[in-house]
Image (cartoon, rainbow, N blue to C red):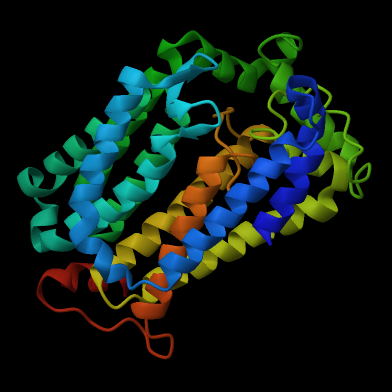
Length: 367
C-alpha cells in the first residue's frame, strides 16, 4: 500500500520539476515505477530464500560494501555538493542506501556469535564502536549525516536487543550525542538546519524557507486537502518536493485524511516487524528483524518529524513514498528478508522459545 501510494504521490509531486528539468512530466514516475518493479522482484526473491543463508555471506558482503563506499570517495559522481553515487548518466548506485541493510546482516551475525562476551568492554563495546565508527566515517566523508544517524540508531538498537549492559548503552548514548552534536554544527549548512528549526521565522526566505513552506503546505491542505494534483508547494516552494518533502505534498493535496492513515501504516509495519523479532527462534533472525524494522521506523520518523518541525530537517527520504531508485530497491529487499524471518524463523503459534547458553541474557531481557 505504501509503495503504490508512493507511485501516485511521486507523479503528483514531481511532474512540475520533471517538466522544468527534463522536458518530461513523467520523468520521475517512470523511473520510480521501474525501480518499484525491480524492488518487488527483490522482495519476492528474498522472502522465498531462507534468511539463514545470509549468515555466511555477512562478512563478504560487508567487505564489498566498504569497498563501494571507498570507491564513492575516489571515483564517485558528485551532485548537490555531495559525492554519493557510483556510475554514469542514468546508471548510478548509491552504496550508502544498501549499507543500511548490509550492516544489519553483518551486525546480526556478529552479535549472535558473541553470547555473554558481548557485555564485556574488550569483546563487546570496543569492537562494536570500531565497526560502526569506521562505516559511519566513510559515509560522513560523502557527506551524509542523515544516513549516518539512521545507521547509528539501527545498530545501537540491535546492540541493546542483543544483550548489551546498561553501562555500555549509557556510554554509547553520551558519546553518540556528543558526536552527532559536533557533526551537526561543524558544517555551515547543517548548522543552518538547526537554526531553521528553532527560529525559521527569523529568516523566512533563507534558512527557514523549506521548514516554513512545508508547514504552509500542510496547513493549506487542512482536513480534506486541495485535491490530488492541486498542490502549490511543488511549484518550487518546497525544495525537492518529490523526495524529502513528499509528505508535505501529501498533506497539502489530500489533507489529514491521507497523512494520518499513512502514519498508521508505518505504525502497523513497526508493530508487525517487532512482532516478527519477538517470535524469532534464533538470535540471528531476531536481530535482523529488529534492525530492518528499526530502519523503516526511524527513517519515517526523521522525515515526517523534520517536515512537521518536530525535529530539525535531516534530508532523508520517506521510505516507500519518496522518489529514489536505490532507496526503494534497498528498502523492499530489506522487507523481503524480514518476511523471510517470519516464514522460516518463527512459530506464530508459540511464544519465543527459551534459549540456552549464550542466548539466555536475550531471553531474560525479553521476558
